[in-house]
Length: 76
Image: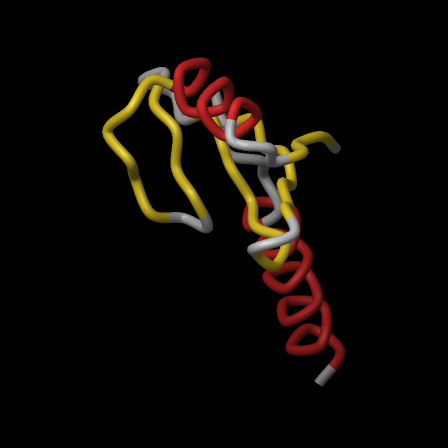
């Protein structure tokens, strides 16, 4: 019984530690404007932007600059 509990706790701890690994190469900011609810924009490892997990195919810097030019505020 004790071996079973130890095994369960060990496996649970390993899953927790490895599942909490941050995505490599992804940097995110939250953005909002008077016309929208807050949304998340991330720079993916290939340099493109994704919005709420959906790829845009547009370079991150270009996307953020376009949002800010339209009056959207982005930051952490």
